[in-house]
Length: 449
Image 1 (cartoon, rainbow, N blue to C red):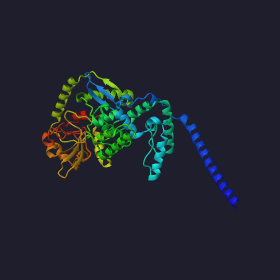
Image 2 (image 1 turned 90 degrees about the vertical axis):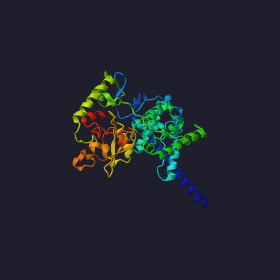
Image 3 (image 1 turned 180 degrees about the vertical axis):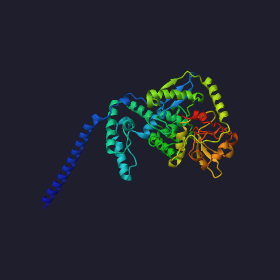
Image 4 (image 1 turned 30 degrees about the vertical axis):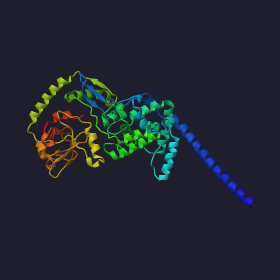
């Protein structure tokens, strides 16, 4: 009887082992077939091997002044060797600690993330390597499907076989989106700290290294507390990887960071000329005019054009003096924005300050009909009826319909020392000024067309 049960158990175990082995062989076979079918269909790596980042159109005067810049993406291509070691280490510690030791996919990282997700009962972390992120950013969508992930793994392997680790890192450092219209770490260093990427401190590098995971959530200007936690995590990873010492980590954690948004200086005297150039290049190259990094040098001298522009604006103001307020240039529906300050900052970043008129957006209208506006850089200013001048009658004036001043409207105000104090200025996205330029032709010079 004992032999009977023993033989039965052995038979069951043998059968189970055979089934498991068979399923494993079947699964491996399916994966092998999928690889053999999919790999030859993967896209060519020409766009990586001959990388041409999207660069804005820049227009210069004859004397070298920038008179116009057009393009959604602000980036500055930088060789990997020109990025400071402290930034390279911070990014690797944040995104892919085994970057120089894996073949495109970090198997140990995948296993660790899988265990963590099973223990937590939800997807808490992924395991995408820097190479996988390059594959996704250049070739794939962000949808979370098995097919997309499978293609991402194969592409990562193909990239690793074709490019050096430093070249992959260079592509990542120049292509990744880091919020505030910054693409690449060189651009982000300017936009967040107004400094060359080579001059970043350890604390600043760790802060920027936290942005790829979620540019909005870890934006140090909008979410300083969350960004600080991310910075601490990265510095601890760097310490764990022996990239820095305990003293360096503590010093970086205690360093007070100063954020200063970089603003490209555009000479305002020849915007009409710049617009003519933009139109001509657009007719010739289409949308590529804004992404190929064209640099156009005109025959206009900035000093000559300044005199002519001032004369034109003076004549237009005199012609239109005494007219009633005629409405703003644009309207933003802020009720649909999850982050009003970020939405307004993004909008204002594409507008110019013209003839002491600074772009601004109306955030609120108080019970006393004072107007709260946001200026470039995030500063908020409250304008009372005296500061609003002739435009005060338009505040929440239903009779004026769409021309009334209300939340979300862009309005220009000229310098008002008494209302704003200390020479502060507030203006809007084109249209007519609260206390200055009232002619649409004059104000439109400040718009990015």
